[in-house]
Length: 233
Length: 294
Image (cartoon, rainbow over all chains, first blue to last red):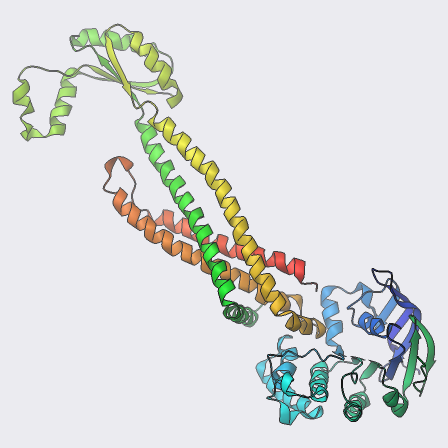
């Protein structure tokens, strides 16, 4: 690809306080609009990879660039800017239980100080995009796992991030729902949003045939365009 | 920081308070009690100060000359008195003046004048003030040695006693105030800690979407300040009522020389309100710093 990388890791190592190795000298480039799967066994470093990208963790050594910025050096305001440009989706959804589907998505705009008018204008569009407009008044515990994940995706893309990170987004849903959720990700990706997804879902990886980065004990052991989920446990 | 943002913080602060009613109420109560005690000490110290000042001005020696002494003889005593070191002023009051003063004080109708006839039981008196109150004791001792002086009177240690009492109260007060402030601080920071815990998921979401720190911390800071302010407000109302009541009573007690002073109590209340808000802000800051990694 000729485009400059939107994410660049240079020799990144992450060692946690208890000496656990998260990533071990990882270098890679991810370009704008790519859809990348991170695969590997539990503890291989997939979650660490994602956490480093939105700076929930800082690397022990090496450099991580998002856009053109070394994100280890960001000041608080720049860090907030970074996070506005990165959406995150988790396996456990992390929705607010005391708020409806609509309010959960609206919340992500509220806390960025958007005007009520803008929020009321944008949230229904996002609800429609994730196919949840008919369930907007429901609370998370009234929704299925798949529906909750749709809301979580809606919240992650409400502020139109350039990069969407997903940590096992289909981990808590049944296979057919997982396919529907992947359709949403594909659609988001189709408008140019870069997606980096950690997953254990062999079927999805094989079906989508996107770039696959396989991690093992914190190291990249495979980086393959149009790859398959060949990881054997 | 715009008005809309402050409005949002305050709204969140009220919501937090409504969500933790019991904890918020006990925090407000503790802050109120603490600040009420603080305020009481301040009122006491200020007024004791005023009282002592008026008393100190009155601290003077009265040297009474033997009643048998004539005016000329009394003047001689005066010359001796003037030699005593440490005297600032010395005023002579003749027997006659003293008697007249007493009759005036008693009022014309007392009949004192007719009872006494030509008798004048009053002595010649010298009224002495020392350069400082500390010298009164030695002046008194020296004066007593002069021939013709039969009595030296002064409100010896009223002022001294008051000063030492006020100093003790002041020291005790500062210690008590310090402890109470710490308790208030601790309670506010605990309340904020609880609401931080209750809202940990919201905070997490806020961080993930890149909310600014002020947006995350603002509502909690506002909560703490609100609790502190409400506590101080309670304390101020009680203090004001008590002060008004006390001063209405003190007004009728002549020697106290204390009256209701709006400026004084307004100043103290303003200080309490500011302290309440500051304690609240600092208490929440402590919790935010400790429990909120941004």
